Length: 177
Image (cartoon, rainbow, N blue to C red; front, side, top):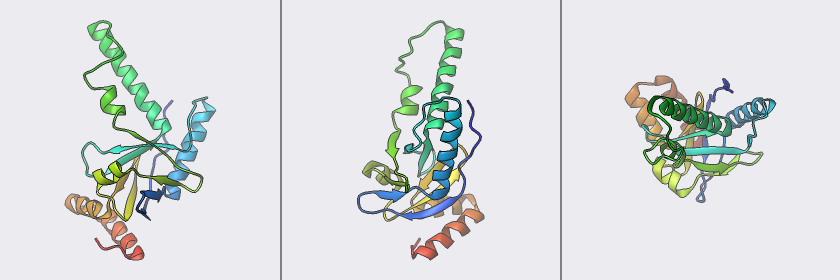
């Protein structure tokens, strides 16, 4: 099943010394809507579970819900089926990437009804997240940035809209970039 409900919006939320942070309300609402749609198709999704990992290209984290997790698993299964048709039957257990590259780096992160969750020390270290996390919807995913890294990235790419949004949120919360 394909889900066309994208993650959008942005927020700047405080992160405490244990890594506790709130998933922004807009992102929680999207997770809820996607889960409700999946459940109408009998997909066994957990509507309080996220998968978060280091972004492959950008200095931030990327997160998504279980509907996207199942979609990625389906894409991987289809890819392996195409390869099997082209090259003969292969073991489903591969050691040349594919599944491990996609799924091994993911950290399962549970959030409660209020959106409270914990970003592990590893995830915070990877993304340079300290006292605040900047969340930005990105279609089927959402990104989690340190405000300084987000500002540097958006400045380098010339994304004036996100620079203005981030600077405004930082001023509101007294965050220095």
